[in-house]
Image (cartoon, rainbow, N blue to C red; front, side, top):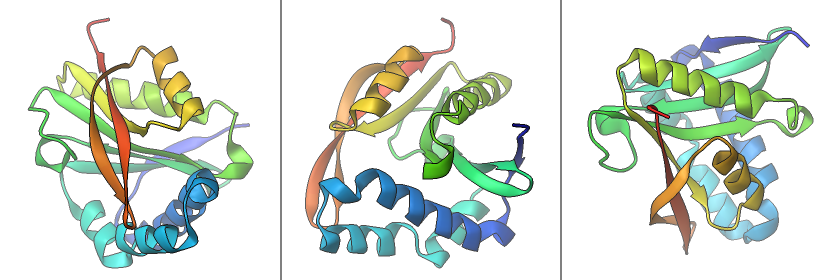
Length: 173
């Protein structure tokens, strides 16, 4: 299947919102209450918030598409857009979201490669991300790519404080 990748603009905000809600729900709905899911989705993926994220020059979003249909997206952050203060030499992968119909087709690996390439082009020495402590498939995927846990932080899902493991990869490897 031939795919293309393109950077998003604020014109893509409604599609971004739809895919964010679809993929987040697919991944986390079974482990969380309906009320907490609803509260989180309304807070994290409302149109004004996503529009501001798209307009931030230190964040970039990319769709991977087949026949102009989005299959998933990648969100990267540098500088003050990072969700943790990590310094000027780091790039954060904040989201790799793949739509359910397109999982297990190598899109996550393509996004990791793209993130590494962009980090190197921007002269970053490390790339990092957060992953929910109970998301075993994602933890194994990132470990396969050489990410190692270095810390954790609290991620609030509605009114439920959860733990995200912070993982980092040196680009000198």
